[in-house]
Image 1 (cartoon, rainbow, N blue to C red):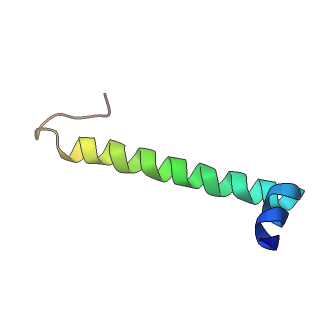
Image 2: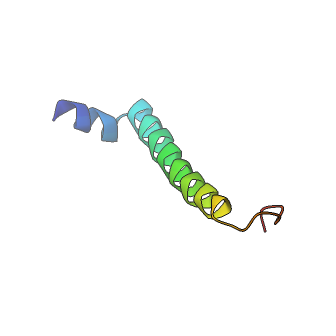
Image 3: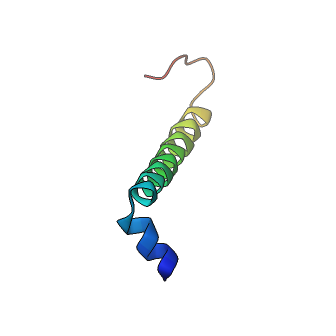
Amino acid sequence: MGAFKLLFTSDAGLLSFGAIAFMIVVAIYLFVRFGKLMNEKPGKEGWS
């Protein structure tokens, strides 16, 4: 429990938590986006 208290109360802990949360969100976005791109028909180029 002490680790969670330190994570959410100290400056370094909050920055670490923010960085971890950001990386998880970006990983989920890329996983979904690349999954959609892989399932498209061949010959279509680009992100749009």
